[in-house]
Image (cartoon, rainbow, N blue to C red; front, side):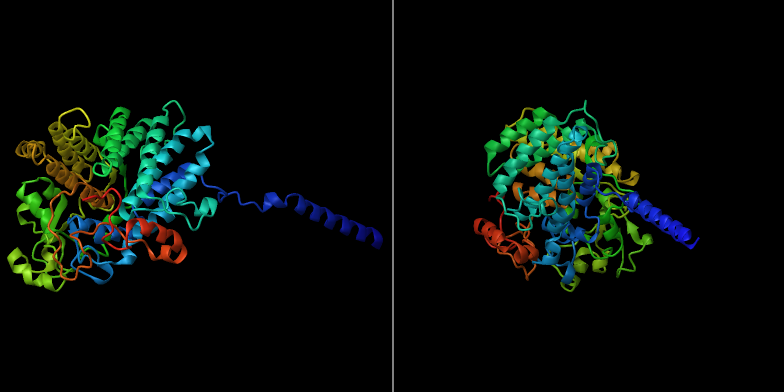
Length: 512
């Protein structure tokens, strides 16, 4: 009996062991967490990442790009120093580099890798090519020569010390990529309707691709006008965006926030102000956009006193902060500006253009029309420069309503402004690019790039006495310390082509 009992026990144990082993893989496989991410998810992440979802990366726009073009400035230094003092603040100046490579391009390049051989994702693949071109344009415009062909491949191919490519090579490949990818988009193939920029629409992505090509081509207007003209015509013939409904825009919500608005509505609420050059230009030209863009906490004596009951959007009461002051020296010019403290100057409106759910624009109909106006003025495309110019002004004024109903501009005001601002033959380039400056408000990298490329608007040098630059304006961002630590030889090779790693270094297309 004991023998039989032992036999049965052993048999049961054996069957149990066999059973566990037989189903081991199935039981221990996590059926909830994904083992791989879809290319659609990755592309959406790459798009979201280009508007700095950690919030703090917005400081590069706030302290450098907006300040260089004299639209938004801070009188405070230390961790916020940048274009306000024309000084190097590397922790802020490297934000776009780190965010774009580590987040936006990492996800976009992986989306390309996963969709390249999949016929069902052909349109997604070409859309990702266009988005990759956008991301690399932002990087190279800010920094100059960058890792391009080997860039953002640390995760995919374990390339941790990528070689730098010249901006000339980068731009010519970007133009080629945009031409090929835009042409390859096919409405008859499957679309990814959950894609967040255009709902997967091949037609809209195609228009975005060609409009981005127009932007890229115009970057070369001085350094390589022949290539610029050729690709401008390719873009026009391919088909550009034709309305504000086709803007490349990130539609934020109360859950997925506009982090620039979050930053300026909270931690930095009392620190950043609209500049005197920007506010005065809008006031002097009776520009109706000023009421949509600016608020002033009239009579505020400190940050806590910037209360709702003090807010005014009256254009006549807006006062921009003069350039060239810190938080001490600004006190010497308060009386002449009619304000009681630095906190009494005008700011970007966090209830319209910078609500937490306000849209953020990557490329717009207004910008496209204004670039066409310049191209027509140069004789590169057919059509009236004045017609494109006025259509571009109208497009941006109508775009203001997309921020908030309170930002909408009345038709009578639009018509009056256009009537009062005819395009003159002598000052056409200045007029067109000054309007581009206004139409690109809050698009930091594009503002910085087109200001250097065109030389407009005409701005006076920041007179701050502690400036660290030798020229009138900052020309590019310095490379981050991480490159010095892990990729020094490749960085040095790039600097040997371009010049020292400082704020004076000009990028390839930025010629005097």
